[in-house]
Image 1 (cartoon, rainbow, N blue to C red):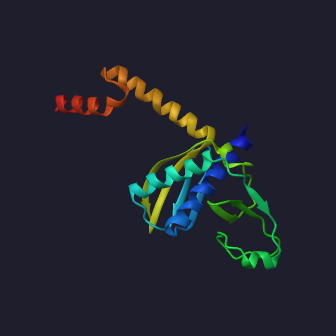
Image 2: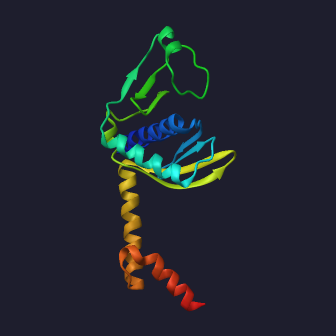
Image 3: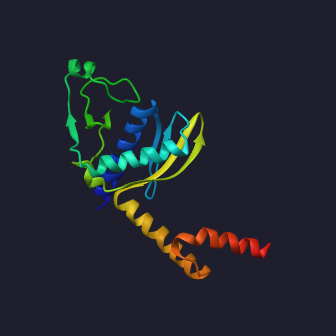
Length: 179
């Protein structure tokens, strides 16, 4: 279960980073996979609209259920290949390709098809150095995260006697009344 969780999240990160790179020329300059969230640091500022577009495109790609291709190209094939890598590589290189989304030198674990990721949800974005830091969750983590958020909103809905999608307005009204 833990290994599959890591595979879903690592593969989701590839697709997010690869698509951001393909769309806007962003380089992934930092990546951390914690036990609850993933962070990706990109070297370019992205707008809220770009992030919404990225999340939509990533999830569409996941739903299309593309096969993931892993190869060990010869040095000659590697020289002719366009791929993401944070450093100059020598020796045998493992290339992980998410066709149409990302091609990257990587030795991590990955799902077999994009559909196994299930869902990618971009949670927060903040300015970080010259770019942005994105917090996200993928796969079963994303579903568990959304379940918790929905349960919190249900409780707030009950406390404020407001419909599920009207809790922010109800909280604002209560704050205004208390002022």
